[in-house]
Image 1 (spheres, one colour):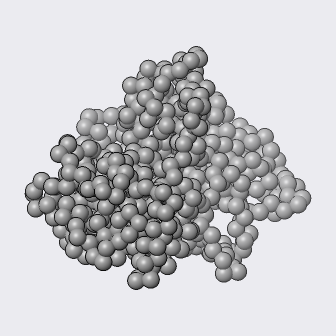
Image 2 (cartoon, helix red, strand yellow):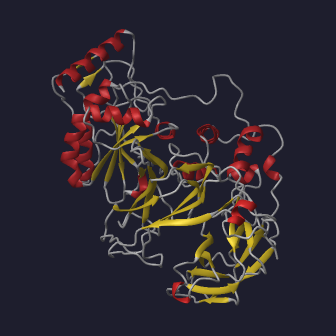
Image 3 (tube, rainbow, N blue to C red):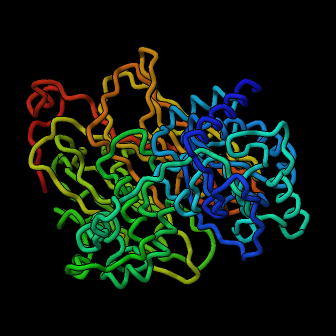
Length: 613
């Protein structure tokens, strides 16, 4: 590391020869004579935030309550000062990790992508998590302007106990043989020993981080009416409107203005909008996340004080109340046979209701939509098709998945050119899972069926890759499992739906192709049991014959998982939400060939005419 350190000093000297200055956003240090600043001001609180590291792993600040202090160290590729500090941080980690101090690096450079960050980390033997602040929101919020700034945050109250340089070895244009002041170590020792931190702010000698401006100097202010309200209408109002699931309605500027602090908080923590796929993998037509430009604009508008500006308020034109059926009135509605009663407390076993399919001939469906009746207690509903030809001993094993509903599910028609087959004489099996809410509740959920007038080109099927043979140890933070399945025929893949329960932490689908290559199809680094999203590809994905689909995932059974029912339990596969599952659902079809149509399919033993009821 000696050669690298000397290179850092040389480059620092060159920068000083060009007139560079290294001022801290807090200390306002402008000259070489500036001494570290002592601060007696009250400690500022850090808003919760979530970021991915360069390997796609999820980190949320306020989830690490198992630590006493989290130290953020800001870096960027190519900065010799930050590189030179890596051995110092490793020494500090060795000294303080056993005392409850966790170290994260944060890269807020707009020019460094995940691949480049990973390459430099390997080159410099940097094994710290390096979180990518893609939108620079963390750097903006903390006022960070230079690399090599360390910010120590108490997890007791999420306030900053120290910010500044790690030590005083690097100075403006030069360096000393060894540090004379160990600012960060002293601050950590004092805080952990229950003492007041004597020097809570010091100046930083680091590389300037270019923080992108949303608008050029002198440009027109961000327009609420023309820019902000349309974003809210496109990404938020669908849930945040009267009669929908959002806890408040974005029905006017005043309603939004009164919630901007909360809006900013849930954006920083990546809780809203509810979309959990890593944007680096896959393109999905139902992506409800904010684009980088939209997120930057919203953050900038909030930071500017959420000005009203001129123009009519688009949010005053509220959307109509949600329709009973999002896809329009179904051709047939199937209710469960009788109203189910859910007790006030306790664990409710799965409820199974079987209904005759409302058809007189073989039929094809363009969509099937579940409408849960009582959202307070409906945990999920799955409807299966029981074929009339299935033997009684095989019932359940041969049932075909028709449609499922869970929180976050959005009604959608089956992809164009596809449909699901509903044979004459079949039955519909409702599997209903209820959770109690403290008082007795009633539910009579129903299913809407939409019929095709003619046979589709290909039959759509829902399949699952699963592993039920796993054990999650008590308090395990990342208990991993996997499942794999071969695809013997060419297949079109339409969507992916990972399924886990409350300890589910992350889930990934990968295609292992027969030529030895592999591709990440979907990565969900922050799986959320409350939003079991189905990710539909913008274009169907061709999976060649011989491909294997690998599903990997992890469970967080630690006390820091806010959804964890009981971290002291050893957990296995089970149907209840306090147990666990690991299933990679997929919607697939065969690949249609030229000439595929009703005639060809009829020759394969299926009826040429499709009768609707």
